[in-house]
Image (cartoon, rainbow, N blue to C red; front, top):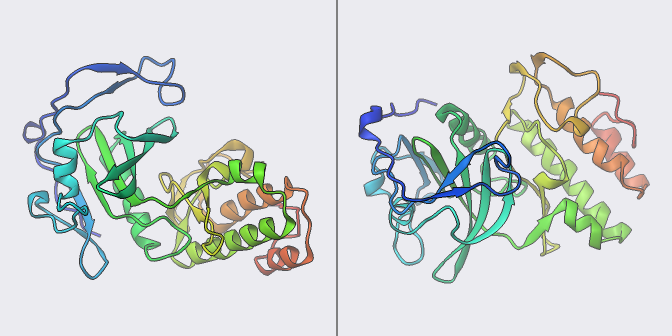
Length: 288
């Protein structure tokens, strides 16, 4: 996909008032600073939104954006006039960003705020989300804006919790099998779209409160196209032990991570094992 060229740096002033030390997780102990914006940069370097047919499309001028909140405000105008780094309820936080739950009128959304470590990195995440767009196993992207040092990704909010928290309160064998089989189906779908997630772990899996909805995968920040030669990344505990350096990024990286999750859960079941064999894994034993 061809992206519109970024405007010159001089055209992207960053106006911020006030400093706030980063909390635990994102930059804690490193001297990193999260600025609290009272006014956003006027010209983003990239903007994408969901159009009326429901497709994600690049918008060259965010001032004519068509996607609107229920009150008629565009995502760009919302950021320009309302958002601060502390708005809404914090849902999650990591090394490169934080996730907050915001409310506009009576609708709740998820706002992912990323410290832009490189515009192309965020564009890559957006491109991967476009590849899997429409999947019930991936949180839908509504709009995204990249500024010079912050990027904002907007998604609908789905009531639920991470798999990490969900497992603490759901011991039912039936419930766990439903979620695990959904994760297998979701991963197979993602692979049909040519995407390698590379950071599958319980904290990056969301289990909706509505049991009729499947679990879905979060955080495609380091995902890449299938087969791409790249440095192996991801959370060490969920990576194959023999993988190091760089090489082709394959589906097995994802399957291994999911296999580790299954292996650590003491709920064996023949149905789940059949599905594991379906994707070429020995039940509860992942060899890479």
